[in-house]
Amino acid sequence: MNRLFILLLVGLLWLPMPSRAQDAEALGALVGVLKDVDDPAFQLDILKGIADALKGQRNVKPPKGWAEVAPKLAKSSKAEVRQLAQQLSLTFGSKDALAALRKVLQDAKAKPADRRKALASLIDARDKQLPGVLQGLLNDPALRRDALRGLGAVEDAKTAPAILKIYAKLDTAGRRDALTTLASRVSYAKALMGAVAAGSVKANTLPADTVRQLRALGQKEINAQLDKVWGVSRSTPEAKLAEIAKYKKLLSTRISVPDNLSNGRALYQRTCAQCHKLYGEGGEIGPDITGSNRNNLDYLLQNIIDPNADIPNDYRTTIVRLKDKRVLVGVIRQSEGQSVTLATVTGSVTVAKSDVEAIEPQNFSMMPEGLVLAFNERELRDLVAYLRGTRQVPLPKE
Image 1 (cartoon, rainbow, N blue to C red):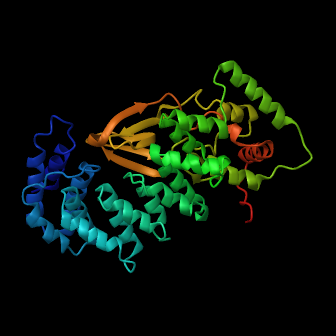
Image 2 (image 1 turned 90 degrees about the vertical axis):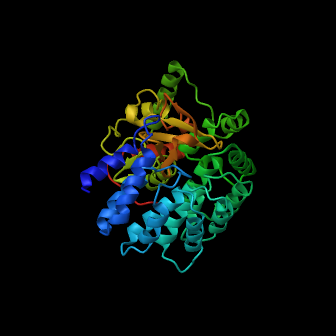
Image 3 (image 1 turned 135 degrees about the horizontal axis):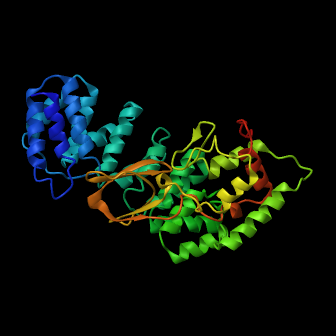
């Protein structure tokens, strides 16, 4: 059987419903090929095609012959074949695969990469034992960030307290992961805002994307708290022009204290780098601003104060509401087939369309209005000076 025909069979799996009556037949045919083929490279091609087509789906009915083929693939000389076969067994609802992955994950002597892959597979499978396992991994430096991101996948009453307990000990990247998870569900968000009110999480350290995600939850109580600690942006065109003029006058006025570009870089990393790339560092949800007209103060202020004035289609925000009440905010990267892939500040998230309650395209960017209200005058001067610079500068010494 030639590879072109194999590709055509895999292509059938991508057809949208209700045109997928051939799914079971196509999967069965591919499994039949796997049964007869011994070339690991060929097996890997087929497994990758099946895995990509079924990405984000769970509890898919096992195709005919899989029970016989899986043990054969588990003994492959190629590690990728073994891992993909196990991943697909998980997609097909195998309890044995779940148990095997938990064993790898909890084996402190296993390679970190293998443990990380096992964790990712268990998260995708929504393992019922997942919350307790992930909460335990918050004390494991090797997998802490993976655990922080994964805890958003399943709601559990102990999750928010467990994250907030270690929050002060986390580095910048870890805090970003923690905030993204805490802002993904109403119950977690209420715990986060409680920590902000208590002062254990400083309001001025909440990144712009976290504020955007918190507001997407649509909770009056949370929005009212954000208004108090983050500020309220005036939304009329006249008010924005007046605000731009006010800050232009402020930033154009010379003061005796020189701008601290290193502090500006630290503020940029905290607030902007999750979405924007500058000097080759940062996220890709928003435009790369390295080559933009950053030296122009008018340009900078217009984009900071009125970020929704001109948004390229590739960077428009989408809110994805899941049936389990989780809320994801990001930019749609793929929506073909039976899954949706969303680029978020902490990485790509793929979910099955069957798990989605609503997809809500927005007429605004990931960058919220009112960003300048999170800074005092000294911080704003340092941030703008850094953004207007022409070279990278070192971060402040700790």
